[in-house]
Length: 297
Image (cartoon, rainbow, N blue to C red; front, side):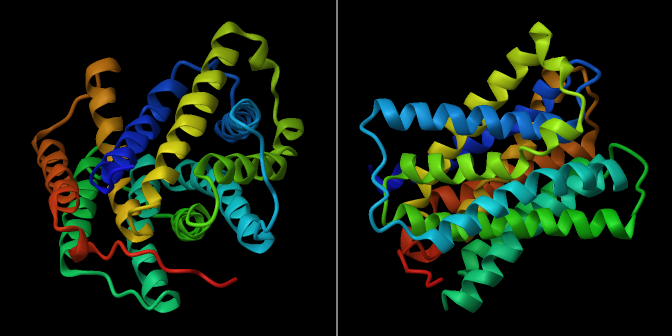
C-alpha cells in the first residue's frame, strides 16, 4: 500500500465513525446506548471473523497474547466509558474531553514508552483540531461539568489511545485484518454481559437489527480495518489526531440529515478541524514521525 494514502484510510475510517451518532438516532427508543455499543461490537466481531475465514483463515502462530488482550480490553472499555460520560456530563463535554484528550494522551504515551517525541507539525495540527472540536461542540448546549463524567471521558480517551498504540505494533507483525478480527472478537466477548443486562428486544424490530448491522459492519468492521491498514504507515499519535475527522463528519451529518443548527462558532470550529487534519495529510512524512518502532509488552 502506498504510504501516501495511509492518512486517507484513517480519515475514511473516521468518516464512518462519524455516522454512528446519526445512525443511532434511527434506532428504536428502547435501545440503550451501551446496549447498542455491545451489539455493535458483537456484529462487528462476527463479521470480521467471517471475513478472515473467507480470505484464508487465521494463523495464530507467534501471536502476542498480552498485546492482543490489552488492545481488546482497551476497545471494550472505550464503549461503556464514552457512553456513560456523555450521559453523565452531556454530549458536548463528554465528546470534547474523550475525543480531544485521545491525541494528547497518545502523543504522551509514545513519548514515554516509545521514546518518539511528537513533531512540531503534530503539535500544531493537534492544537488546531482540538480547538476546532471545542468550538464545534461547546456551543450546542448548556455546559454541565460533572467530575465523574469527566473522569469517564478521560478514561475513554486513554482507552482509545492505548488501542491505537498497541494495534500499531500488532499490524507491524501480523495482517491487519487478522489483528482487527481477533481484537474485536475478544472485545465483543468482554461486553457480552451487557447483552443480558439491558433490554435487547429492540433487536427484533427492523430498525433495530438494520442499525445494528450497519454499526457492526460499516462503523466497526470496515472502519477499523481501514484504521489498522493506515496504522501500518502512520504513527499512533498521528492516527488519533486524524481520527478527529469523526466529530467533523458527525456535525455535517447532523446539519444535512437531522436539521441541526450550526452557528458561526461551529463553522469556524469545523474550518479549524479541516486545517489541522490537512496539516498532517500534506506534511512531509518524516516530519510527523511515522517510522515503525516496536512496543515491548
